[in-house]
Image (tube, rainbow, N blue to C red; front, side, top):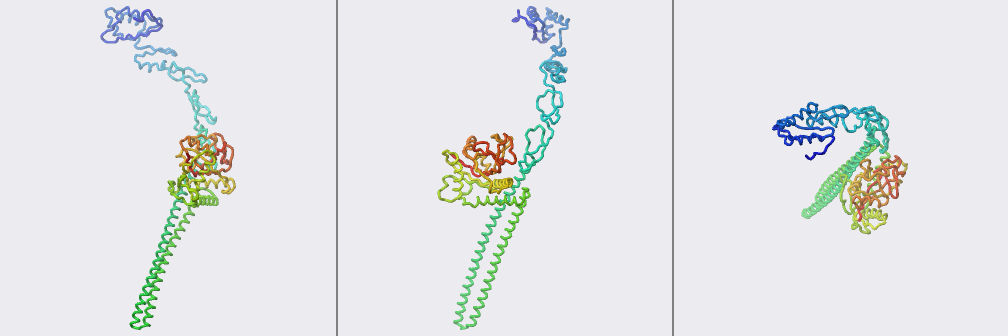
Length: 551
């Protein structure tokens, strides 16, 4: 009723009624049917149930006549006719699912066949109304480096990752250059497996050396304890010998008195002298036996101690030989490294004694951390706390130019870091043809979060590369530090810390800064990108010693 007086080019009508009783409602009225059939200009499509319509108009024969007329013009279909504009095929869709099966994408079941622009291929998709997707025909093209032919889709604009193996030379971070294989598509060279194995060997060697030193220390402590026990036993034996001699002397005097008493009664002077001489001889023999027994026990103790010392010397010799083979260096270089390491450890160990025990230990007890508070320091008292606190505090306060207050200082002693630093010092001295003691060193600061500071002081610095980098590598790969504390303090502050690391660093050969995310040349060991910044190529060039906490 509402559509009366209006019209359209194409009209699709749902007749709604579909039941076995022939109940068709308003479809019985010819006026309404007349309006319905006369609104389309070009085409009209009706969707309905023929049996219901014929049963509902048996009296008037309205729908029987309409359907007969449509049948005579071949206009009745058992489904919805869908025309493919590309191939002129008509598909009858009698269920909703037929649209997806018979005319997917608005076409038919034939291939599209439309030619692509820019190649000699045609679209192989099922017939569709949308724009053709890029050509999916497999073709051969050169890889991004222009070295190999790779298979790709004709219409694809993506760069194909060439999987062919190519050779590349590592940068020699371990001291030697190696030939490796990598995938052609990789721009950056992966980690050199040979260098990585060398690093693993060095780390294993360091662990074995640390374990050896721990065993050495334990044996030294045991020897010291046994020597003390032996000295104590010797003192006891000597006292026992003296006591026994005094006792025998007392017995001899008592016998003498007894004989004198008998002499007074019997006046047998000769017999008395003989008896005294006999008892004296017996006492002397017994004293000599006891003395000989005690001397034999002392000799046995000394022999045992001497055997243990020889065993320790033998273990040391074997460990140094194993260390030499593992490091693949000449014996003279190894001797210098070991002597320098021993000297460094001795200097730190035999300075004025610590007044308080370490706050904690690491490396199975070989490493230690001491906490020094300002209130623990008293003027005029010569102790290691006084020396360490004054040195670290002055390094910070004289350079900041600000009113800073030291809360406390952590002093780290890490045998592992000491060993790596001394080996690196000997290596640089060999490269520069100078003595290790003549290498230039500098004290530098480094800022990060507190947990990272503790890890660095226990295990040493490591150069981050690739996905490990958190603050970038604008001036090349290396350890970023500064001779002044202001910039490192800023980095620490950004990560919620009020502390900074103070490390002793080997400068080596100083050169120009490399490009961003690049390695420095093998002969360059450090560079100054700007101001008081200093970047060191290897983590072993730095010996982290102090963490300074300030207000």
